Image 1 (spheres, rainbow, N blue to C red):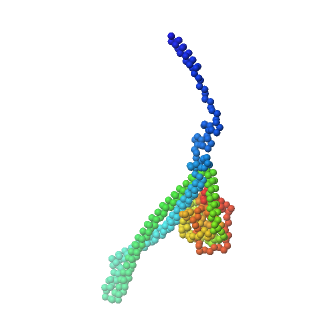
Image 2 (cartoon, rainbow, N blue to C red):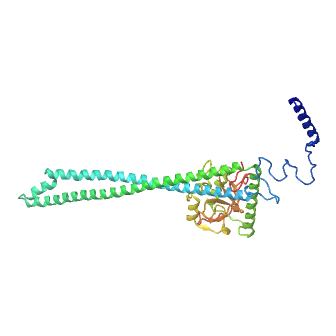
Length: 405
């Protein structure tokens, strides 16, 4: 068979075989079964492509582990505020100690300068006497010459001169020795005071850095919270404060009208005048305050100096039971005595709460109570008393310093 006929036969065979094979049909999509998920469509309650499960609720409506609950957010926020205030009070304590030691260093330096001046004069006196005696110009040398003379009366007189000159010399030497000892002692004290001053400066700087770090954490936490979370945290905070206040008042220990002392009344008036001014750590007025800055300044205005920090106010001032509270007393909070307010009466206090808040009227139980102290325990309460006039907004704002962004 020729090549051309062979090619024609092969082509015919291929066409016959192709017609005998079945043709594959295009796939037809199945009808969706009711109740089953359709491929490619997101399932309700599950994150879609590119989404994470953070911030969503599980089948039971609970929060997923990577989203803090509202109570946890409030707890963390309160911890940060407390740590910031602890650092602030540590700064205040270092600042007060530094002021005292700076004054002591200044006094010692002045004393040392005066003693060194006296010492220089004493050395000059001793040197002058020594030179005069060596040159034969002192009363002592003249007396010795006269003592050897023939007239006994003159000898007796000159003997007295000899004794006087000897006493003067001995006195000059003694003054010199005392001055040297005093100068050495003052120099040692001055060096120690300077060392202590440097240590306190470092402590103050460390406390300042700690407070600023805690405040930065607070700012970052507030910035990370959504409006809904901030509202929930604020509502939970108010609810917890109200519960604590009801529990405190239920015992009836604060019942009955009490009046302040005259000084307590003046301190309260001053504190009431500061309502609305911002909290600022380390501040003691007149434009801003921290908690102990307000209470110490209020009592200073009343004419009584009390310690600057809440810890020292708690440690040094006479304590009074809560059932005996009278207006003007100081209420101290937290186990470390890191917060303080001034009692207004009727279960209320005036306080500079915490960063982000302003001086305001708050429930007595706004923070965990430690106890109370009285700056003027010997003073008698007033017979008649008119509480300070308060603006309608005196109680506005959070009681623990929380301020929503």
